[in-house]
Image (cartoon, rainbow, N blue to C red):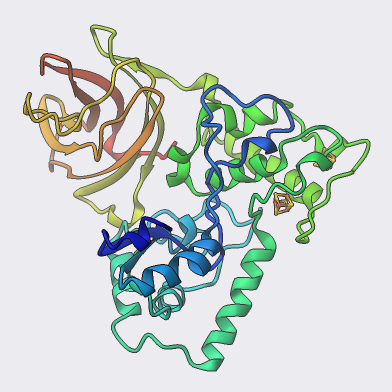
Length: 379
Ligand code: SF4
Ligand code: SF4
């Protein structure tokens, strides 16, 4: 707050949405009551209180004439379902029926907010977001009331990861982390928000649902979520994904190595973007983990080369896409590649490689995956 009051800034970018929380944040270390904090968890990271951003930060910024830019307005698809990568399953939690227009207009109604920065991954989403604010942004009383009712429905079915239930499980299950892992499985683009230790089958190692045979149902959610029944639904959902080859256990992920063995990468997910698929174009979102010990450098200006993804058909380069940022060991990243498929080709095999500069600027290739153009199945 002191910084905002210091008259140094003209603008401020913070997270806010009308849920008041961002589902994927890590949580207070004190809530790791079911065991020790895994080594790769930043124990100092606390859940960000988005409502406090509104009640505490908005007024101070307004008083200092600082424009606020809002990120995470759609709560990673939990408030407004993504059109480009819709939720995989709505059985564990119904999709929100809140529209982009309602959410954007609600946030822009705060006088301190200068702009909102929603994520967009398809033309349809761009159009929807632009149309939302092309007319009046004000709500009528009726519209506001409808929006509030929809918002209440989302809140009552979504675990906020408040942690109030953690010590209530007789079998020591990390309840809110299980909810979190299921939301990530339901929203595949969120996979980079996770790490091996907090994926579903790392947290719940039994093949059968622990809740289904629980001898003492002691869990309780003060916000009305039926934890036992929700966790049983989640287990069925995750098991189904796994049985269909759509969810890979961390231990089963294949790691690719560069020929020199110094760079390593794990393919976490490859999602085909249905919204850009047509006869001659393919859109893929590729999620990777840097499983090696060296960073994947971008903006390596002294060497004039960036870590990037290349798409090859036989030896021909179809597309190249730089990573958005340097990816350190154990970090995850994703990028979207759009490329045209040559017509009348004899072989339809597409190869995707990561190319990483080493300390000397030499470009080192790491094979990521290959697939036939007519079967770019999402994993
Ligand atoms: S299940 Fe309920 S009490 Fe437990 S973390 Fe989620 S919202 Fe909080
Ligand atoms: S039903 Fe599940 S969450 Fe509840 S106490 Fe039993 S094992 Fe724990």
